[in-house]
Amino acid sequence: MSSYKFSVVIEKDSEGYFAFCPELQGCYSQGSSYEEVLENIKDAIHLHLEDRIESGEEIPRTESVSLTMMEVAV
Image 1 (cartoon, rainbow, N blue to C red):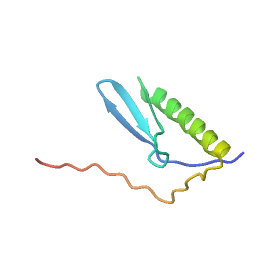
Image 2 (cartoon, rainbow, N blue to C red):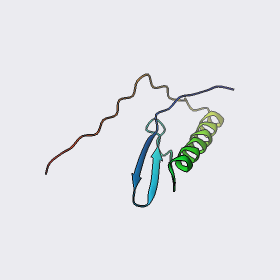
Image 3 (tube, helix red, strand yellow):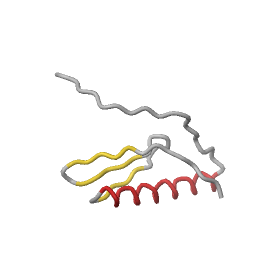
């Protein structure tokens, strides 16, 4: 069994939490709590990787991730 590391972005709004994995296009989830969205995105990543492996697709490997908040006045 292989182990992989991926970045996960988690956003909070009035509806709850939304999470996505930038390296895996279309891999996202949501939850009503931070803990729930973490579990849900972990499951989504696991299923996404299983599908890629079964299809013979390459698993992306990211060496570095940078995230920042930027304020933009309009």
